[in-house]
Image 1 (tube, one colour):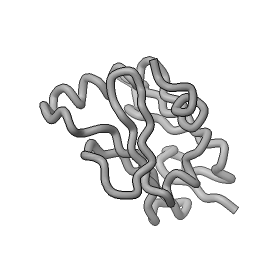
Image 2: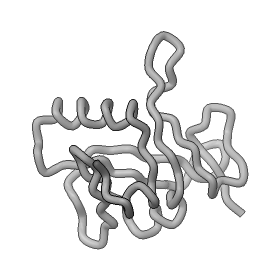
Image 3: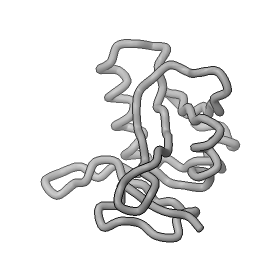
Length: 115
């Protein structure tokens, strides 16, 4: 089970957790976790960035049941309160972000802006 702080900071649905655990296991590197980030670019100004990496100095680290989530300080500001879901299947989009901090998003849901 995720720590209460982790669940308050970022919500990861059971489907997304299952997919993250599967992808981390495939990497076969026990020191890595899911890095959630934000970078400049995309249709709306900011884009989401997902990677599997080891922790870096200054990261916020959140403990989930079978993995850790890492965020740099800048990204944490934009991602606090967001939910990560996973939609698979024929019409699935993969990882899907729902961010209460976003004031607008692009049609594909992979970039956003804040005021």
